[in-house]
Image 1 (cartoon, one colour):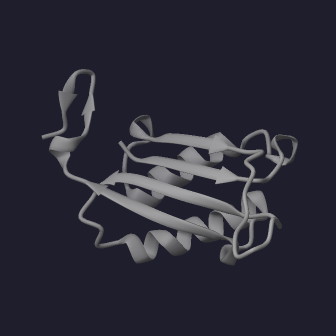
Image 2 (cartoon, helix red, strand yellow; image 1 turned 90 degrees about the vertical axis):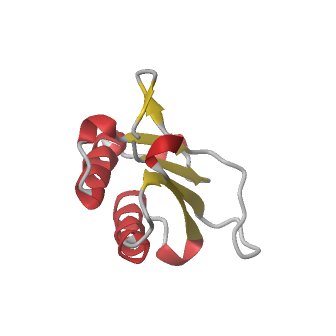
Length: 113
């Protein structure tokens, strides 16, 4: 059920055409979850500032069924992935984690609990 949401002021025409596919594979591998459960949402062309500057920046949210024990590891991997694929410097976006319980997420009308 992991969902990675990336909000950025990067123009849509600067996003690599295969970014969503690469992000889906990356996230499944990083979280050790089957890719068929992964959702990736990219929101380019956002009106954004970070640290008082409208230079290239972003805001990232990761929703995952997890206890959060590996958030530190995931933070670094996500930062490196986004910097390499979208050229957003690691110090120009936050990553926030929403760690959900199995009973808080449903697919096909059934919770994961």
